[in-house]
Image (tube, rainbow, N blue to C red; front, side):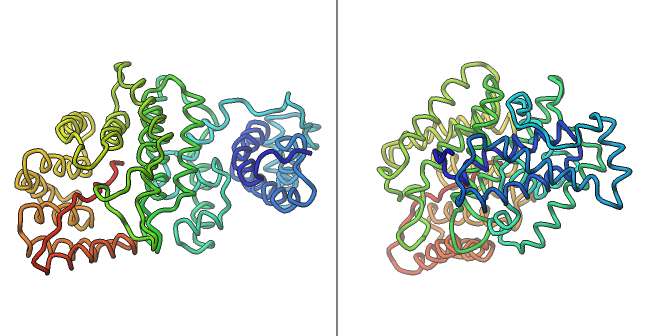
Length: 428
């Protein structure tokens, strides 16, 4: 028996490999995914008592295969499902599969699962939930806790997602080279959505959920291992590392939000910053410029500044100019407006924010109100900034974020006005 790795970490690593092995062998992604979850649960219950098997992947494949075969032979679906299985494998292979390495999943299984879970027929919320369960190895209960919804609701969402993929004819395979860029973009977006939810939770009493951010980074590392020459994969991994490096300094002892300009930079994760800078520095010169690389470069400029006052805002503005041309979006425009204000003054930034009001892409978004409040504060418009901070506070369900914005509003009432740059939102 081996106990080298924590069982939870090991199960998350093995989950997509085991699921890939079953789907390649038997098909039936929906039933296979359920069987793997049961095998993972059995391992989580048994291994702490009996010890981790010498071949944990083979153990999981064997147990999950048994559960899947039982399901495929169930009474009401037996004939229909066994005909489908028989068309893929000889009937005698419906017995317990061997667990030797000849049966081990291929290196592309995780990537194929990611493409399947990020199928275009699914909503972003369903893509995220299914990816976390099928590829991340998280249980439905863990995912529901992360997104603050009842477990039954999350179970229904995951179940509907699997049925949607089946109805849409989703295939367990890595796309052809011609399809890869477009399909990969969806996968990277889902991974970034998971990371952003972990870095700044949509709602709840904690500013961040480190487990989700860590899972997004782990999955992105896996994709980079499978696609080592893809510059955008490297860019996304660099972006996550460079942003997550600040996490230790983003909250105070009571969990309160500390804005970027006020953070103790000695608490930043220098190893993550070094790795992120190296990744983006390697990817940028290759000539395949993409939005994640540009965002990583912006994050690197922030992270490499010894103090907030040393931040090279003209360089950041130049990078946002490129990003605006390459991948324009309301959130990019919002960040661009803040950079404009830091270089050319708050009035210039406010003019761009006014355009966002007209375009409507961020109307009602608390981050737009927060950015406007900060720029109005810089411009000396205390009354306008007070109202904007109040609106921003009312628009967020994240408690530390709301308290920070309320404190900023309250700080405009005394004679001494303190002005610090807010931490601009991440760009999806």
